[in-house]
Length: 445
Image 1 (tube, helix red, strand yellow):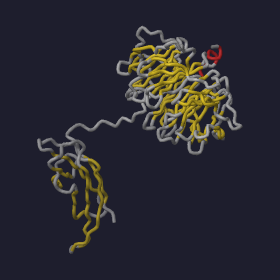
Image 2 (image 1 turned 90 degrees about the horizontal axis):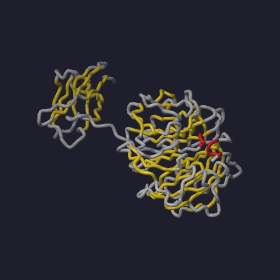
Image 3 (image 1 turned 135 degrees about the vertical axis):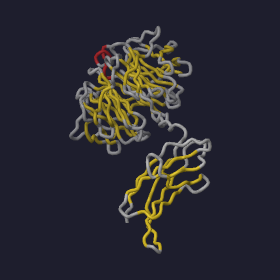
Image 4 (image 1 turned 45 degrees about the vertical axis):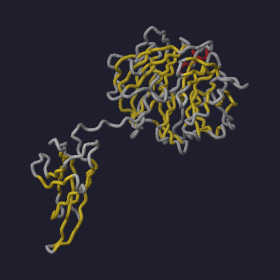
């Protein structure tokens, strides 16, 4: 327990969350879980703890189908289940004779049937049956004991888990099918030093942050061997902890707790390319939206959640507290499902409008022809016809194309160097007319 109290800021794990548009942040110092509206980047309240004693929430994770969220309260020695449809804690995991002791991280298997929990105080890893919210036992260490297991990750194919032992300076390998430790990762002459977090990149490698070593190990997935460290170059690590990988597997962000910076790692080359532009105050954990556009970072001492635009790697703001302050924000969990934008309201307009200019030869000379093409609107209702106008007010009709015809409009005898605007609408059998879609063409040779 002394190790946990001394190093509590090291020992969390980034989960992946519940249903959009909300995500969740554990507030270590006020025993609450913040609810953030991702669309507005505002805190909108706290999870209802009900009658459950949630003391110092740390790690939070979601099931793959995002129907269940587990949150660890380390001082309570307990795991709780949040129902994201109610934003309420609805159950405490039954230890079933296998108690939690200073639990620090939780992770679901890819099939969502079970979850592993690292117990720093117990030097073991609990196995939870997710369907029943009940512990079924501990992972068998196979003669390879855990030593303050801090965090873990499970491979995308669900075959193995890696557990970092912060006091043992090693990484345990779990066979997920048998819930048994098969050995330790070979460091290959590149030792771990207070390893605090781990992330599988894919089924080829994993990254381990070494908090005291101020470096990041690279593990070969196939051989369970460290191949070296991420090359930091002119951008050194300092107390690295939180790791998150973009959906496209191109970039990793790593939070440097003592350096107050975020490292940007090029995954194919295992090289730090820059720091994120912006100030942090002991950043701990990171979450990235499924579309790889925005990252969120918990600033433990800054009592805020910072927002990063990944296209520019700039901090662009903070999540607004809106009367629900963050206090000791620790871990966070974002949805990893890509939510498509809502369709435009009916009547649906035509889509994919394109245009080009062709040159024809007529007895009267060169004939410049603007040609428009489009695709029928989304939905099952097909328009009766389309009308093409030359003005936004839809007063200058250029032509009409029926849906049974090829969706193409030819505008003859255009002038070289002139700019032409076209507005295309869909007209339905009940008389409804869609909003216009616009295209601009300049006639060139």
